[in-house]
Length: 386
Image (cartoon, rainbow, N blue to C red; front, top):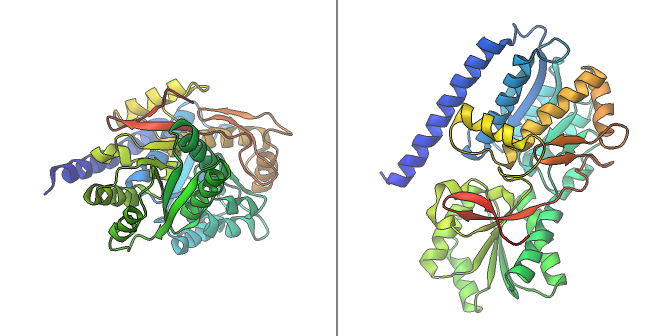
């Protein structure tokens, strides 16, 4: 067996066991009651996938901290965890099960844009809509899902524009190629980058979609080589697709600068050839935001040396935002919907570890900015020039 693959699998299993032990201890020590008087929050994401682990771990950490401090209004918090596999059909079923459970007061999720788009109409429908807050679904289409779908991350338009500006002005690139996963996230980021890069004088050489079943990326890159190559390559996808793309680039002999959105975060831990990739992100573990240093230290103490990623940090923020909402408005879905819709307008913005959170009329994060990070020694770190 390939040793790097064995190590990655071993670390993944170890984190999973550690998470399960931590959750069990948290329930025993901090107390979640028998569930009859708990405040239940849904947590929906592809938790069988490594890139979603930070989301679940951070949620469990936040709940443990809150319950240890006495809960909310004297009641313990409880997570209703549902694995949506990152698939639209499964996400719809998960959303229905959470919606139909009267004990669930709000949902954190879903993680991906495609899953959120599938689940959103269910949460926003019926006689008593269930407020939904996504930590990382960035597709522009989510803005029109309904009044009770919120997100605490910038949209693809923000990421695409920032990446294009970095490519053109910081890297001095005049030409770019794009490879994008043919889903809501990949299409959104690709389109935003393409439009912005062209507007500021760049030229797009090739734009190629892919799905998980694509047999090889080599034809795309052979064609790009025949056209003279490109100075930068945007990967708009997930860690699994990015890993295959990086391996193919090496075999073909292409050496463009690599750009990507935060959808590929996680690839830096698993692949040595991810060194030097520039990634747009809303959060870094060393971000100087309110309470972030304390959060990162607690996360590492509970789960090991790896720092939380943007998915985990945003989930941690959402838990604490919901606690503030429950303390102010109670646990009825209708009151929580009303409170969340007014965050940043009728109530104060929420100071999170990812930055200040306020919602627009469409449930989008107001003034959500992204920074460009770079992969160094299997870690994502800030670049010198911002």
